[in-house]
Length: 85
Length: 93
Image 1: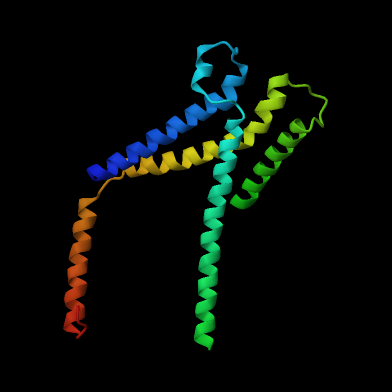
Image 2: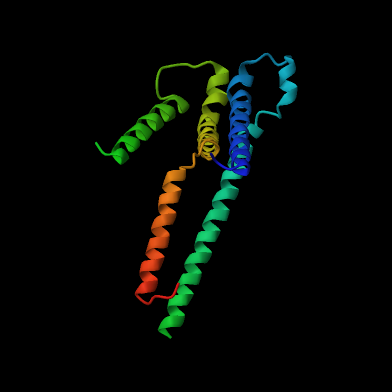
């Protein structure tokens, strides 16, 4: 079987992703149809953040990935130039 | 039909239906909350769900990964055989 530490990592990833999915689904899909005075609304931030947070995360993630990609490409081009010189 | 064509077709059809509902090209009237909030939030919900599914899938497979001791032992035997064989031919290991 997978080692103890691997199991902990795997289980925590699984529970984290399940919690994220359930919370976000409730927030974005279910809450708009729930009466405004219901107690559950206190557990969720204002609805606009359900769009803003994934948007910001996506932009941030893309920036990191593409910056890394561009740095690698620039480095490899410099190496080729150095070799040719 | 290749996998890519299949995926592209599914994506295209979903996107067309979604855009048709979003820009109200069809003579269908949806409830106000659905039209104003649920439809715009659906792509983001799909993205979050896809991310959660990917992460959960990785976590699940890490959790249930099973060692195979016979394969491990067999591999060790093969490694030592290869090492001794190469050493006899003069390669330093």
